Amino acid sequence: MRSDNKPTGQDGQTTRRRTFTENARRAQIIDCAIEVLCELGYGGASLSRIAEQAGVSKGVVLYHFAGKAELIEEIVRDVFARGEHYAHREWFDHLDDDAGAWVLLRTYLRSHLGYIAGHPHELQAVVEIIRSYRDDEGRHVFDSAWAAQMLAPLESICRQGQEAGEFRAFDPHVMAISVRRAIDGFMYELLAHPDLDTTAYIAEVIDLFDHATRAEDAR
Image 1 (cartoon, rainbow, N blue to C red):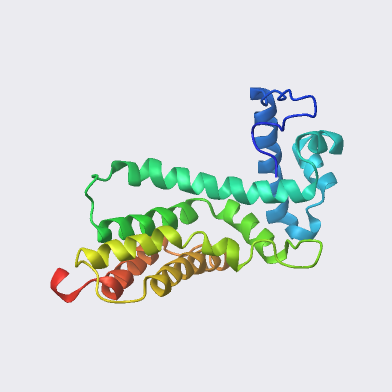
Image 2: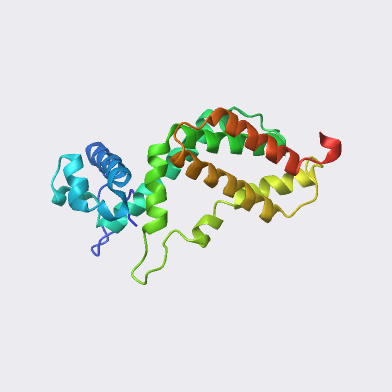
């Protein structure tokens, strides 16, 4: 995958950073690819169709992305980055430095579930990619190893809560998996039922994990 800094050439000189216009064009292509993925699914999201949606030639798409694989991976990275930015901007950045583990867990749930509720379109595209995108050997690119990376902060919150006496004794890894499965399940439920009462759903999930994690004397 390419980073924002293009690689250093053989002559030892680092190539320039992308311009504002180039970054804007990349963002436009990503947004149009999301639209195509939602409309036609992964199989129908060809570079030609994405270029048509963006109102540019396929060559323009290939100027900004090395191919479909890079574009697809960038979509997932971009959507998750948007979610993390939302979580911190709207929630975590407003917490006190000494916020307890339950406040952190509740904030994690509320921010992630809230982002899904407000951005079903982007998450639908990600679901299409996760289900269908495979490498040259036919293996899912976004597999369990990728998903495991998202468990670390949850496990840390769980251990913090247990050390502080806020949480009962349980396996932090298992609880972290359960939290992520509840978040992922909400994404699939919302896609299947667009008229879902998301406010009530989110409140119920938060209450569920309150009962699942809290120590008796911390209630």
